[in-house]
Image 1: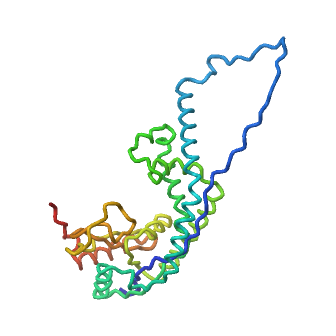
Image 2: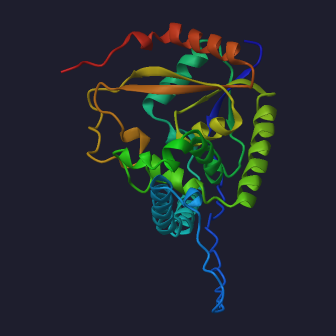
Image 3: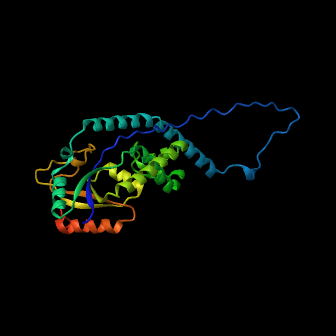
Length: 288
């Protein structure tokens, strides 16, 4: 390997923009007085709405009412997320404190393979604030599902489930969407500059790099990275958001390799070399 391979620390302060639905002004009230000799206007039968059209209109009005209540909570949710991320940044923990035994073992294995590891940081951009771009793209792909009202047939209808994400996406301000796309362009450029220094980025399979590469288009390969030991804690009954708590004793863990744009072959070759050196792909958890 002539060039560098790097481990990635996910560090970045996210500044979120609040997506607030603009309040529509009430329509003007008009009054008219018909003269005694005037003939009342009657809509011809062929121009009157059908029952199907009225039903679709009522369904859209219902969706609008549901979305109105959800959009009111967006500002508070984003502010809370920003505060949490600022708290994590100020903690300023050393690198080793963020590595699990499996991750440290992976770095040791890469070093034995002759890989030159250097620490790098992902571009410091508001990746979480750009997530609505991905949501809007998904909403556009499933627009027929939403507009037909068939999204109500989906079993999960919670605040953060896809049906409500698709509905909320229709109320993103156009200006904020354009601004987010500008930030997305910056992300693409900064990732390209980062890969001028390294060939591959080795990173835990965490949310931030997942969001970032979905926005920039950089290829990613997720590989098996061993099994949890017998002393690993059992997973919580309810997901607590901690990735290290997912799974349990004997369950598989993963590692992620990121590559530059249009360097998929190089990334695949490196991933294959690591897989052959570890043999983790041959391990399987025991089934009861």
